[in-house]
Amino acid sequence: MKFLVDKPDKGLEALSSQGIPANKREILAVLMDDRPGGLYRIAKVFGQRKMNVEDAYGFVIQDKKQAVLVVDVEKIAEAKRALKEEGLTTLSDQEIYSL
Image (cartoon, rainbow, N blue to C red; front, side, top):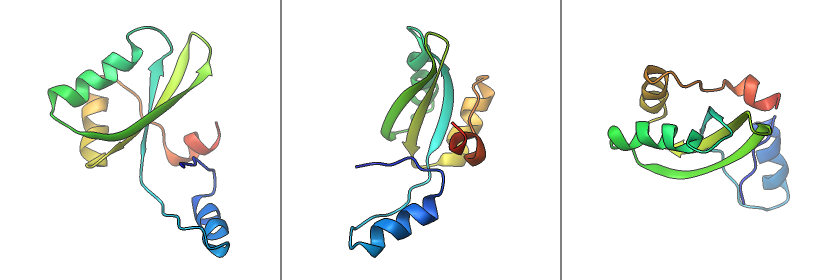
C-alpha cells in the first residue's frame, strides 16, 4: 500500500508505532494535462533518456485540465532536470502536500 501524506515523518512514526513495517521513498510529482497524450509526453522524456520508472500513479486536480503523475525513479535529480528541459513542471514537497 502506498500513501502520499502531508507529514511523511509523522505518518511513518504512526505506522511503525503500531508494528506496521513501513518506509519512506522520495518521489517525483509532475504536472500533466488531463487529456489524451498527457501521460505520453512524460513517458517520452523517460523513454528517450532510457530512465526506468519503478512505479507510477496519478490523480486529477482539475477534470479535463490538469493532473499529477507521481513517479518513482532511481535518479530523481536527473529525471527532474530532464522533465524541466522538456518544459514540464515538477512539484515541490510543499506543493504536493497542499493538494
